[in-house]
Length: 246
Length: 179
Image (tube, rainbow over all chains, first blue to last red):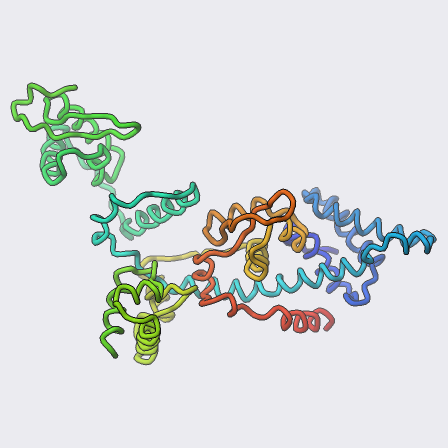
């Protein structure tokens, strides 16, 4: 009988609006007894299908049943006047109408969101800013970090070629040391360890690079220092390499 | 086009999707904001009128250059973009409520939606679509939320006034409800 499963609804109010529409109930003259039984039927059928039902749905169901049962009991008028509370029916209708408003806007928002994704921008021209960056104080939360990392990942994925050929590149540690020497000459006197891995496209190259760095430290071409969690390498000025290690 | 228009075009190219505010441009060009607004309008009209591959937009006060709508199929082809991002119905509802009622507390949002919104709010915060905006004076001083610049961008809004008016929606939707 019910084809729409509970996880398609974004909440109990969404479900109620669906039932009202489906059963052609009048929202402004709402028959809460009818809505309650429809709602209860639906929850029961979902339960029979072993679907998980969020507590919010049950809490609204309890509210509906409470209202329905109160209506069945004879009312003491004096008591009713004493502590006037908003008629639960009115309050439910008001909530449904308000919720419906926002629900209706989502279609418009969704459309705008989809169209916007077709407009593509380009990132800030970064090179021009590199000199400015070190002076900038970083203030931010973990959310900033997540966002920044996402941008990096996007950039990396865009750099991936459309077609990739896999070719094993055999590179000896000595060859890598030669490459690193050339690279390092372009770096400032001290630089972060990560810089050496900038051109590493696969894990094999990373390993060889690391071995090469270790070897260069051994022969005294590089010095290293640790500050916090960051490892810095320093180009040794002495060419004989005898005063190398810390 | 005036000189300002041409300079602004160049500046907008540099900043890319970050965009520039009218204020920033006025400070850079040492001219009044009115002059900047005029120049930006001219630039936007130029791109549109001459049917260029780039458009000049203003989302939430940030002016930026983006590709024109008809570029997208080619971009898809070139970058092999397959999927589009989507926001869930729950996310859109929560955003709509915040956009219309901001600043608003979590409990107020939950009252309207009838479901807990704790995780959703954190997700939206991580997406940079909403942010915390101080605290309410209500008991417990709950956190207030509002939408961000990023929200204005992803929904192509210059200001929140561009969202459809709520009253119109009520009449429209209730009719639909009883058809």
